[in-house]
Image (cartoon, rainbow, N blue to C red):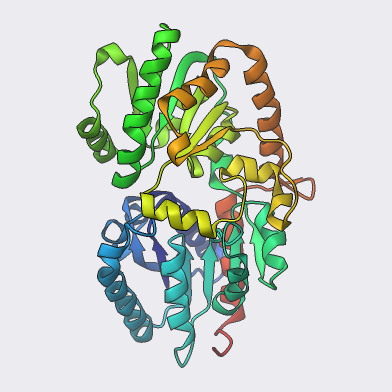
Length: 397
């Protein structure tokens, strides 16, 4: 049985790899056992799980409305290649993970085939952030949407989308990581070249500024791989005098858990920090034109995931309530502003204690549905996919 699966980002690569592993295990336990073959677009984690690579995700990666322009021809060529593969190989299921514009275009093309293949979206797009009416389109494109955030299910249900909260993988990864707290500041500048260019020099300058005020402070630079470290060193190198430890890959959770505070680029890493119970300040910088466009499209007053988990009411026009992580975007993200926000978290228990109380609420919301523990996200996602497989051929386009 063949399954087409696509992921375009490192977090999506890890998410898809977990799903592949759990799907294979569940299908092998069935009677008779079914052997799965996975084909598609992905990265190292999916390749390690046996993905037959139709195109490496690194060739399609771009962040921002402007940055994606140079690779549009490559994206269109990949879409044509995937549709042709589906027509020829007729997989039992298509699973799209992240890369939401790419996924939507792929799903739309597959719906037009004479015999459409069942299609699942794993990780809902952030339609709640901008142009929310796009949510109705998901109903036409996907047989099911598997949500990583608890507030997404109710939001999508308002548009008639079949959605299920399967939990976020960070919940399981962050479990049991509590350690003795050290006077360390975690620095999470992102994973892509453009993200690192905009955030790493800023974060290094902030750390150096804080070290003048707190001489015992040390830094912890958290990156996805050695390639990202090389980019950081090229952008703004650091020496032993800066007191920075580097952590690469999955070992970050134990290291992050011991940090007194963190400075993080907005993204999935802020949710990981929240689930680990690490107080933080969030920042985000974009290409100038991308920011100009985003200001006109994004309707929400908050942008970091932990703050949204605490404030689901703002998705329906409600007022902002409790905010756990201070947010600084674009011109407001300066070493001075970030240092000013981080300093109390490093030297006082009052500021840190307030965040810790709110972080406990975030974890409760992420770990439970209807008062019951959510369980393994990958297992729940695999179970949802198997239900789709059991239905057989898709409805007509």
